[in-house]
Image (cartoon, rainbow over all chains, first blue to last red; front, top):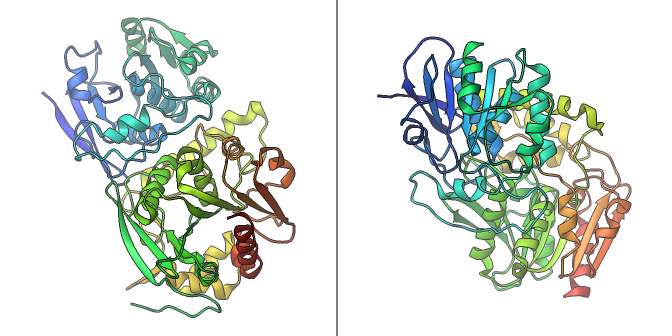
Length: 216
Length: 305
């Protein structure tokens, strides 16, 4: 059973699903591109001693589907930050696109992210890492999730390795825990290869990463 | 309430339309004869179509159907859920489609409008007949040069400030004030423009609520920011333009300017191009010097079309 809390991020109403009750620091789940937290994380829920919550990003799940697109991963960072504002300190597990957002959040809120885990999932790669031709397309949409503009724009957002590493550096330099970021994804696009190689970033399997952060 | 002031040479648009850009209402303004060839005027960040009230009628007088639109969140266009460079590009393509179908038209872009049009000229070259870029050629990130090892620290500060803004922006409103107060606030970003002009802009770019005037600009929008893009990428697109190109750069330093000088961009100029540099003018060169700029544009077009 899940309860849904609505969080306001500017004009977007975000759905935060409580997937399992519990005491202690919540595990915040961030879904991949085109997914929604309830459908993707419920069966089975990851092992975690405390409460487990899942955030639907803008244009996904039960969150607002905006008119006319305009997605960036930085906006999704704002989504995740709205969840942190509501929850306080969290451990974050992100799949695919959600894994990239987990990295951004770990860099932006190093005091409130007690461990960010980057897992495989849709939208892990992002788009080009240099200037390329841009297809400028109107693709409509009927207002239902997932928003086709989210699929288009977040499927090709720019993720240069040096930019991603800046966020890893912000996290590792300001966090009070060792290895505040753990890469568990098997597939490692260039940004993730660079992040995994950055000092203070760990690699492990998912269960071990969750168990380590649960003990902190 | 209509309280438009007069400003010497300023003419309000002859026609307005509303274009549905994938669910976002875009306000389009036109000057001149509908049967004349189209010339698109594209405004910069935090501006709006009516900032062309002096330049547009001069170009219309010379035989163009001059069309400008308010970018999402600006002027009379809808405040959107989301803003991005890609969304601005797509909105622009929708307006071009509405105005001219797929026929090529003349395009004049200022500042960020010039940067958006440089990207559109690369993505949709079939829409362009000639392109004039008024101080909209960034060659590096604005702000002070930051050494590599301090980059993450600068990013951290920018992130904190941006997230704080995102947290308080829901339901936010712009601060109300008198015409004089709003003009003075804008004057901080536009120090070279006259008070008379800035007060005129309040009356065409603001709305008069019961508690005072407010700029129409979406309060959730913020200039600058951070992201993975590099402003200089626009230059690489410029180099491949096939249509006649006129680039205008200025030398006077001011907050909204990009500090681009001819030596930064010369090697990226397309084959059929001309670069003009005005050492003594500022970023809003078309507002400071409408006579010189409109003559320059019209001479360029008569030579190249």
